[in-house]
Image: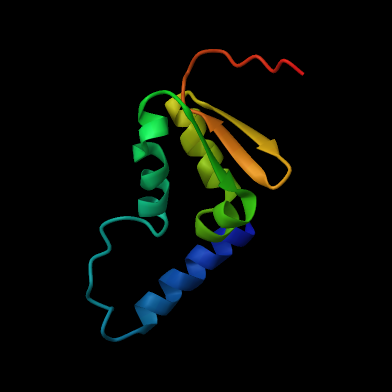
Length: 97
């Protein structure tokens, strides 16, 4: 199990153990709002580029989850140092140097 997946499971377990939360219906998976925010940004919606710190992605949703969403949308993702860069355009990407 990926580290991000373990955190999600731990959060879900904690919610289920809390009597006040036991009957609450969870409408979105944990981290979904954070993921949606990336792709609702002006840059993403205009076919531009967005970036996020690798540590932030790992903490919020895990890199695998972000990669799946980027692939689902037909976009491209590049890891550069401690950043993940997403080209929000399905056209081919050419790395110059």
